[in-house]
Image 1 (cartoon, rainbow, N blue to C red):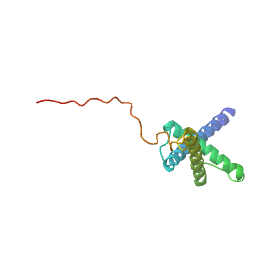
Image 2: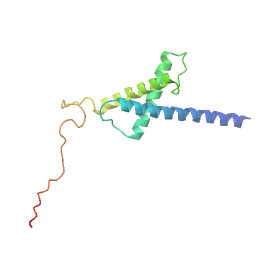
Image 3: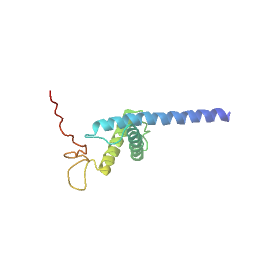
Image 4: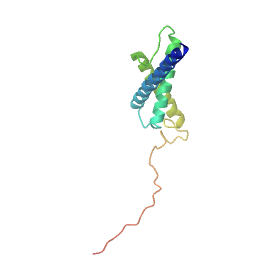
Amino acid sequence: MPDADLAQAAQQWANHALVWVGFGTLAGLLAKAIMPGRDPGGAVATLAVGIGGAVVGCGILAYFVPTYRVSPLTPVGFVVATTGAFVLLFFFKLLAGYIIREDGEGYGPHFGRRRSYRRRRAPVYYED
């Protein structure tokens, strides 16, 4: 029955992928909640940072402790995935200029007074 074995293997791979996506998303949301300041990106960026953090964090843990099976389902795996997502989000904000700007005008892309390009209207006076 090679078809049954193939179907079971495909189901296991799909299950593992959905577990990594689900817990990676939770790790990304937690990392964005912990990181101070405004965060760039929306839901897709949170998903990507969370999944990338889960892969990077669990991969680093598996590299340094090869006898330990790492899964994001375990509490240790979730903490490592959140830490990995936090580190990825930090480097993303660093490279995007949200932490340090090169022009020396402060921190963040909107530091200081924001300029308004809205046209100012003259006041309207009504007579009775």
